Image 1 (cartoon, rainbow, N blue to C red):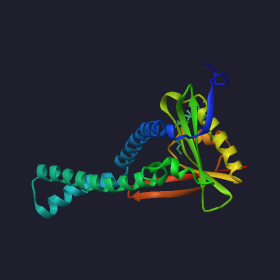
Image 2: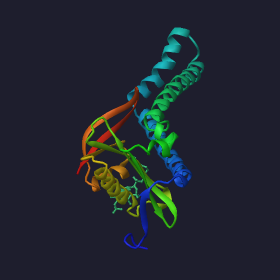
Image 3: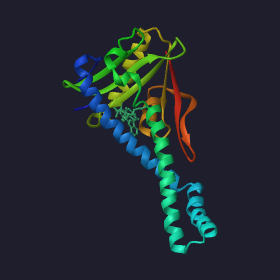
Length: 225
Ligand SMILES: CC(C)(COP(=O)(O)OP(=O)(O)OC[C@H]1O[C@@H](n2cnc3c(N)ncnc32)[C@H](O)[C@@H]1OP(=O)(O)O)[C@@H](O)C(=O)NCCC(=O)NCCS
């Protein structure tokens, strides 16, 4: 079935949709988190800091504790794994908090989006929730934030995200906003392409969390009505 023929209904979320919305979101977020862990680990093992740790730690143990070469290598590696593992866990906790896992809207979708300047839309294909998008206020009364854009895995690449973004723009106009901004990670290439296709341009970058050499930034994009 072509994109044009497929019947995609975009409407406001109803209380009966919440379970499907959260289940689809969990599946997508889990995939995004796995990709982020892999990309952070890849960056880490290619970073000069990693080589410095791996060579210097056993060397320092050898020099100061006069241990055997084998013992230095084993304890040095163990020490690096424990310390860096702990630092990564701290980074990860901040990442999850900053990337929305604990945000108040997710904890109570219906209540949060009943606010007069917020809206939560769902795309429905043959009675099934296929994707979501949200509009909410920012510090600037004329600017809305587009968030929670998620298309469930089996509905991808059928133009649903673009339709959700367009519906979000109409909703922003109805709620008296004149511009829409959003934040997205620079390595989320699919989402970036999709936003560019919808007319967004980059106007800033925000650091969510950093724990040298790990860091997590979000690009800030804007679309004006
Ligand atoms: C990003 C996302 C919303 C796209 O949903 P989608 O319904 O598959 O996107 P669409 O079919 O509307 O794609 C529109 C355009 O975006 C681009 N695009 C979308 N996904 C892409 C991908 N994985 N790789 C490259 N380009 C992609 C393409 O240009 C596409 O047009 P085309 O199919 O004619 O080439 C979806 O992949 C998703 O839910 N990702 C996880 C959640 C997420 O990253 N949300 C954004 C957080 S800021």
